[in-house]
Length: 384
Picture 1 (cartoon, rainbow, N blue to C red):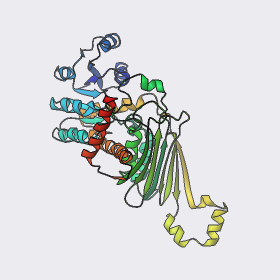
Picture 2 (picture 1 turned 45 degrees about the vertical axis):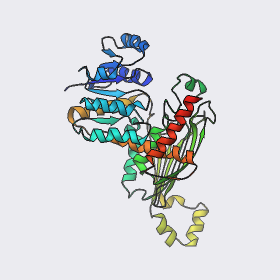
Picture 3 (picture 1 turned 180 degrees about the vertical axis):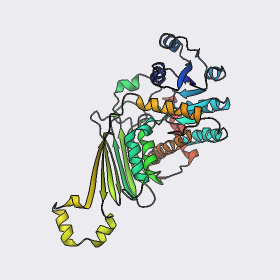
Picture 4 (picture 1 turned 120 degrees about the vertical axis):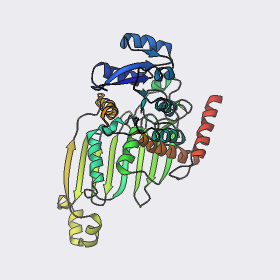
């Protein structure tokens, strides 16, 4: 196979972007095999923008057409697992958009089914994992000798400003029944994935979420979560969609140093010459006084500052598409295996559940309780 024939399910903003990346030959090992959308208007768009590409209004028909080797699911979140499973059943490779699903129970279904099809490629569009900045941060954390054991994580990610018009543009947007949540399932899944990918999953969370706080929506638009990693380490994760001057700042504090990421562009790494505990045990009060007075604080650590190019422009999505195709063609290791998608979904589910119950929640969560609470909100939404 020289090129993978991709079936794009959903010709919206994201599906259209992927189609254009391929049409513009930015994805060297991929071509458009077919496009599917159940909106009749999208066929007109497909005919104009992707002339000659087969179009289907039923994704099962597309999967069984022989025109596609693989699919990408650019559809509402609830449909990702279902469509992925149907593709894999027919020996068609599957790339899911994020999140992998709305709740862990449905994500487990596709993960379990994919495990029975080891010859097929199952991946997820965690394009931020291709970001050289975060790959560098993960490398530092994985090399425990650099900043040591994590003591605290803090991520303030409020650069997801969305006006009311954004939500009004689609009836399914920011609803329990259409998306399964707000900022935690639409805008912030990338940071939630990166946080657990780099620092690991917490054992407990306590969340204060506000629903329709600054926007006329039923789902969360403001979230503050405390993370408990179970070994004394803690974290804070804050996100929202109403800060037009938003902040993107990640801090990871270890017993041998500290990492600070600003605007996903600049990383400052401070590596202590001596672990903090050893300094605490051995430093004389005269030395401490000098430190407090600002004399020679640089002598206790080495600082490195790294700056990276802007993350925008579609290059990351292209990298995931190329990697997905390369895994199909020659088993190149996946940047983001599909099975990884459940971690971010579980963390978001735990945040929701903690907020709904107003108490700390342990991971893994009670899946049945989560689904019961989610469905209650979906039903209330339909009745209103």
